[in-house]
Image (tube, helix red, strand yellow):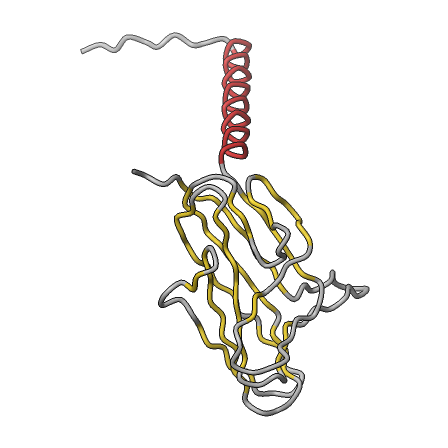
Length: 191
C-alpha cells in the first residue's frame, strides 16, 4: 500500500488564510454581540441613600434613584418600579446592605411584587443581631413579563433598628449603595 503525499501549502498562503479566518471570526462575534445587545433588554439601578422603616411589620417598597445602565428596562416616576419595555423572560437580581443599630435580634423580610401584587411563595427572612453589623442579602427572581409590566422589591422589619445602609467612597474603595437591582432579559416568552 502506498500513501499519496499531501502537498505542502506555502507559508504565505497559510498566513493569508489565517488572517481571513481571524477576520471572519471577529466579524461574526461583533455581529453576534451587536444583535444580542440590541435584542436583550437589561438595566442596572442603585440607591446611594439610607432606607429605613418608621414602623414594624409594614410592607415598604425598596427604591432606586440612579440608573447605571439601561436598554429596554427603566425605572419610572415611582422610584421603586423597574419597567420592562418589551415582553420576555427576565431575571431580576438584587443586593441590599442591611445594617443593625443595636445588639438585639432583628429580622428583615424581602419579597418581589409584580404589577403591584405580591408574588406567592417568594419572601425570605434575614436575621441580624450584632450592633453595627452589616449583612448583604442577595438573590434572583425569574419571571415572564409582558410589555410595560413592572417589578418591585418590597421589605418589612420586626424592629426599626435595622436599615438599608449606603456608605460614601473612601480612599481605598468606591461608594457602597444601599440597594443594587439588575434586570436582564434572558429569553422570550414562548407561546
